[in-house]
Amino acid sequence: MKKTELVFIPSAGMSHLGSTVELAKLLIDRNEHLSVTVLIMKFPFETKVGSNTNLQTEASDSRIRFLELKKEKSSSQRESFGSFMYQFIEDHKSSVRDVLAEISNSASSDLVGIVIDMFCSSMIDVANEFGVPSYVFYTSGAAMLGLLFHLQSLRDDFKDDVTDYENCKVELAVPTYINPVPVKVFPSVLFNKDGGGDLFLNLAKRYRDTKGIIINTFLELESHAIQALTDDKTIPPVYAVGPVLNLKGSNGQNQGTETIMKWLDLQPDCSVVFLCFGSGGCFDGDQVKEIAYALECSGHRFLWSLRRPPPKGNLSFQVTMRTWKKSCQKGSCSELQRSEKLLDGHHRRQFSPILLLGALCLTVAGTQHWRAFGMAFQWQLGRFKLSSR
Image (cartoon, rainbow, N blue to C red):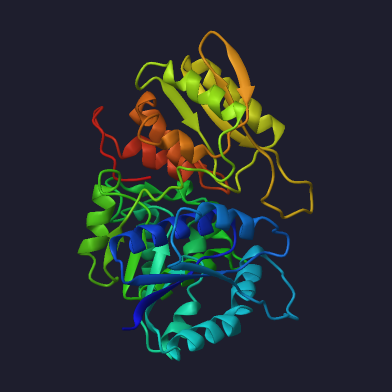
């Protein structure tokens, strides 16, 4: 009997690859007849993707295999990050076709679908060539997805130029948000007139061509947003599968990790602020000082995960991550292998619900105001209405 096979195509970078691998593990654990092939794209400056992937999957069986894709040489000039990403993914299409052809012609495998990363929407065309359904794995939250769908509809259905909203004082009624959203808190990339905004809206437009959207979120966190997406019949079905996290880490326990965990075990429940800023998040010295000052003024115990900015001109995301901890009376610092370790079932209880959501929401790249709005105004009258990131 032929084995059922899914192909996953994550975008380059450990943050997206890691969550994709964890999703693949969940699927094969629930279906003994399913196998998964993960196609890996690597940025030119990445060196650790292969080894980290092997460590992440050491507990898995042979039903997950990894293939590193070959990239075609491109003569196009990279004028912006958006154009770079588009061309980078286009340059891997030929290798993806070769893999799908191999699986399709195999006597032992039955290719049943392709799961693409949120940035790999052009791979939908490759899936269509082979007559198999495609699904999007959206690694951000449901509220953000709804915002993109809403703005894409304004642009394509109502001929609005979204970039014209920059610096406007209007508020938009976005279905995935309980309250109207001030345009001034939108992620700044959406106002980029050099194509950055269109890049994200074009991605959302292509999501509509898939058979379903898998979102790394959960109902208790974004109940309103998930319901709004479910009620919208112009988009494919959505499946909330989160939180998808790698809680085991990749480097094993070290002395710094053990010190942090022991300290955390000594803290009262719901008493610690935890801040982390994603795999590409970093700040300059002035920003770090402002965050530190705010944490000091809060009077709360806290843990924070910081990474040094890469040197100017260096695009590498593989920079050192350090985690600092401090109680109200005493402070010290130590390294942490992975921030997700702090969110496992044993240690999560020490974090305040409000402050933990703050940690999940605060990221960089021009989205702080939007996420701060999601935190502050999706909760009403002191009750938790966890329907936005």
